[in-house]
Image 1: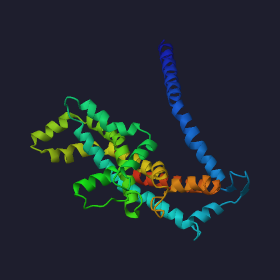
Image 2: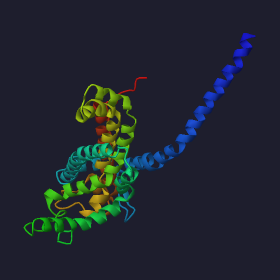
Image 3: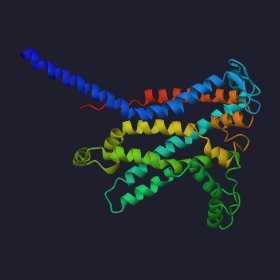
Length: 313
């Protein structure tokens, strides 16, 4: 009797477990297909093409082995451009990641207040994320115009009473990359802000009440309660911001075309230029493969250094 009573229960558990499995597979299927179609297959294709010298114009191709990798990494004639582009990527990331993360935290704290109309301001600060980067770059190219028709030059000219001459923001080697970084921070900070804001709203109010009873000020509460509670959120924000900043292409292509003097040329820009302009798909593919490996390595290191704290229940 006891054995017959237990059998249906075990069978129902088995069925229920199987249903949950299939439900999880079906729900993850769209994301898995997108990952397969737009990440895995293109990367495998680029990896295969990197071993060939492929010309789109003539359709001619011949096997080269690791020669493309040797040229972009070690050849004294072709490798300096790649290493300069990689250095530009890292410079851009060093500017964007800390500034954009810090600004996202500040905006999230500001918009985490229970005030009338706060939903409007949250939408307002998030709005630049919705705009295509190509559109943002075209608009900001007008702001950065080298004459007085540009907004920034006109503003500086008015404030200084004409003492400051128009600045070539995108044509000066020391300013071009920083100018593009400023535009990128403005365009992308809303995304990080929303993530941090969601993390702030998950912090229990009891922690702040306990800190207030201990006579902790706002700054002390921020250091002792807010930052530790946001650790996992900030780890994700830093990693995703690093990836976004390293894959820089649209802004460079529209605003500077890699100039001046290659100071804004990035690896993504060089790989696209090699494939389309120089008619060397293999070289562009090799650059892409090397760059993806570098990004994965950086992400793994960040993940190990900025370990997430497991929630204890």
